[in-house]
Length: 376
Ligand SMILES: [Fe+2]
Ligand SMILES: [Fe+2]
Image (cartoon, rainbow, N blue to C red; front, side, top):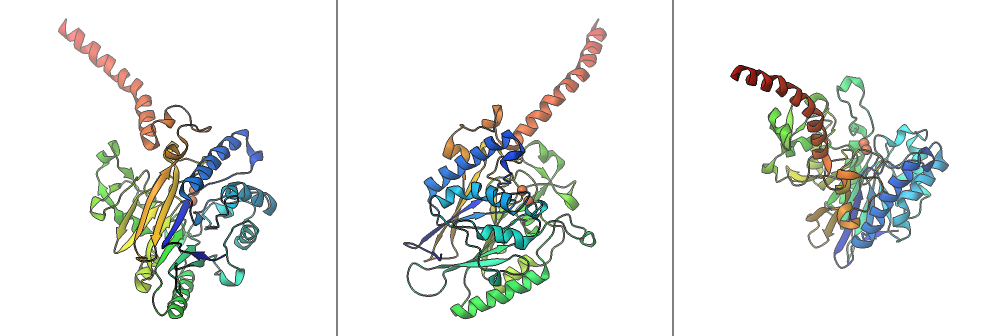
């Protein structure tokens, strides 16, 4: 199936970190899956995307058959609506017994609507691309890169998370060159990858510890002890619910995009709370928070991200989150109590406050009694 702009428009729906599990695990899984499916059915019905992209940490299974069954369940809303989908794998996807990337890809190839190309067109590391044709005329209007960002880095790199390998960057450069030559010029591209690039930190501003009291988050890994908020100077918009879990080692992926000049936007999963988007050095970097309910998330603020493109101005992009609350209201089986009303880390802060209250009270009582005794 080929992808094409219609009436100059092409819409992509990003689905972050579903983390779907086999139903046998626990009855609660069914409720969480029901909520995921409700969100997805409502989203495809309201948004009518031309393509869905699963952003990694997609599903697990004890063998290829069970993995297929799990994936069939979460891609059903796209299949029954004849919407094709593409995917990237996340750091957790290969942690299940189906731990070989090629074996997983062979399972995905059997799913209705999956656009994964034949093995010969996929890099040794699992990277591939899909082009989108213009409304009219020849050539490729847009290229979409799907890049596997691995799991953990080797200890010598002093980085918890892996990064895109040098060999992958070589494959990307060669493939981009071939596409450029075929089209007689650079084809604008959007890249999808699970683990964000370290350059996401350029969208943040370093703050004091006090920022924790409002919207500051503590840095991850080698950035522990530093606090950040979104940097208005980078025009970053959206929600920073946790510091980006990017690798601490920079292998030059962002620099490679600058060198080739094709990538104008890159979108990531992995960080379940974050849904911010900003621009640095001319490239849009954006987060897609989780759409799943099996993992930590953002209550009813979870949702899908929409990308709207126009082949008359291919490097312009409109993007927004569409949330569970907008699509399905508060009718949700796996989110309870105040989590339905107050999303995200404010709930964590309220919990911390409630836990701290008895201690504050215990400290105040002797102080008050002491003062009263003094007055007498
Ligand atoms: Fe995840
Ligand atoms: Fe992840």
